[in-house]
Image (tube, rainbow, N blue to C red; front, top):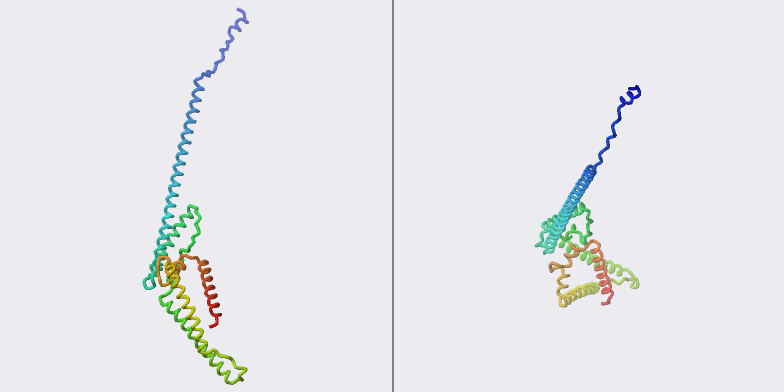
Amino acid sequence: MTLTKMIKDSTAVPSPLKVVNNRPDNHSTIEAKKKALEEQKALLEAEEQALNEAEQKAQEKAKQEQLTKIDSLFQNAEMYEHWAKEELAKKPHERDNGQAEAYMAIARERKAEAQKLQSELGILNKAEPTDSNELDTQSRHPWWTPFAQIGGLVLLLWVCVQGFFDTQKKIAAHNAVVEPFAQVRAHDLDSVQKLFFEKMTIGTDLLIMLGIIGVISPVIFIYIVPIIKSKRDFLNEFNNDLTAWQRGLLTSIILSAVLLYLGLSHSVRM
């Protein structure tokens, strides 16, 4: 055996390369895992959507409960305001001003609570036609106020009558010491009689007008006559249902009409 042959025989023959097994089973396993993850993701999304819907329904239910509570508070406030107005509409000797004020205080408290809930919900407060904080102005005055007012008018009339006769005496004293052409004509009792006759005529016209209204439309008569109290009368609605601007406007119209009537009646010669 030669050396060359011995070397060839001793050389190791390399083994063939190992082939990686890419069988279809491995691919199927990966696809199955992907599908399982996708299904799990879909389940999680569905669960999240269900939770969001449940939360939204709970919020809507809570909001609806709040709105119902707000409506209930406003209705409760309106009820107490109605009771206060009924109390103020009574005759002065039957009216309980303290009770009316207590009713209005409760009404203001209910409205304040309702408006607070509205602000929490982001609801804008609607402007109200009437101011619930306003009470009948007469209810804040003591019982003797009308008598003081009448006394003041009587005192003013007495001062005017005294001034009238004092001025007459001064004119008479002036005429006694001056020439006839420089004398001043003084008003006398006849002038006072004419003045009172004019005012009596105005008062009579007013009574006749009220009598005609009472015959033609008793409802309007009951509505405008102050001494007749009803659920709907002029003084009650003027003090409680009108705004300050509306009361000012109506007062200006009435005063202007009365002054015009007095001016026209005074210009007529007796």
